[in-house]
Image (cartoon, helix red, strand yellow):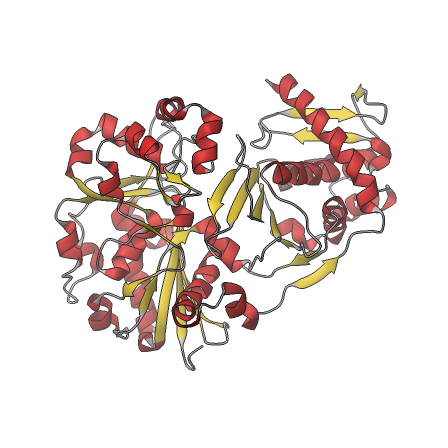
Length: 530
């Protein structure tokens, strides 16, 4: 690592643009953000988006993202940040958003005038002014058509890592082609938010990286190339409009001379491929082979490092942004902390202390009692309602309050383990669970997590993990070019995770049979919900 070097990470997320700079020791030396609603009120967004009258169509103005970049770089310059010491930069974008560049824009990108702000230079460069984003759910017809075209939902999942989802880019492109053919015809290049942002820095169209590309329903995740069958089902001539795909650690080239002249970047500063925010978080959380990251928030999310995935109708398989031969899986559980808080209020008078006492007073395995708690329709699995089963496999209407609390927490973590294993995850001797999010501060909840997975739990203090992950990836991209170093080698300098709990002796013997019963009951619950 070069001395007196900076590595920049940007995160073009839904509500704000964030930046982090780390030094050669991977210590954060600068951090800032531009909040779209608050700092750029002229665009009139709410939560960074426009929700259309049908409540299904959700879009964001492309120029808002560009102006946010102008603003954040000006703020850094005003603060005295020394851009000349930046050796490499990378970034992330909210996954599944798509940007439509107008014919003739490439030439303009390659010849930007440093005298003017970027948003002024590019204001007429998009065939679609407002980008479809991940919150959009208006493409159900396109999803069904794509699945049928490739032989069904499971076949599409085997090919691209996911069944067809309304927010995924291939289906959004198909809708644009179908409803606005003139826009599609005028489009020279279609970018993801990540590759669009990389293009701004590169001064040319940036390729899509493998990891973010696998969130499109278009990329063959094993061959690492566009699937002709999927492209043809979405729109004609799509391969040319998408360009190539590249490994996530690729150096795309030097930063555009626009940034050299306007902000004082070094001409030798390298742009490393940008990726999606979820893959970038995997890097920021510093997952290694066999690890599992659990974010315990309003909803709960699992990031898994997988070598031999088995794509399913639930969850997503992406190409791994850190190790191109491996994969990452993502599972989302909507009933996370909101459900834990509801049971806390119902069963322990709103007190976390009493909630934790109940967890400590009940035995691992809960004497065979199992519960499913879905206040709202769950994503994984698709089920709703509260369902309780006693030790004799009978459905019951209620549990004692302490049993209810343990049944909730154990049930949430058993579901996570079962669905992780269905996607191909296997617990190994070196497996670590990295916990983040609000509930990761609760050691009694983490103890249940550790017991169910039979693995030690570590906590990570990383806020803005996607942004930080991109700063790490920038350093890694530069080093990899010189010495084939892995990201794991690079991030040895970063602060260690903190070990907080280990599994209790014999936990694996308790949960092995319980997990089988939970999976059987889950099938019953899904049938009843439907």
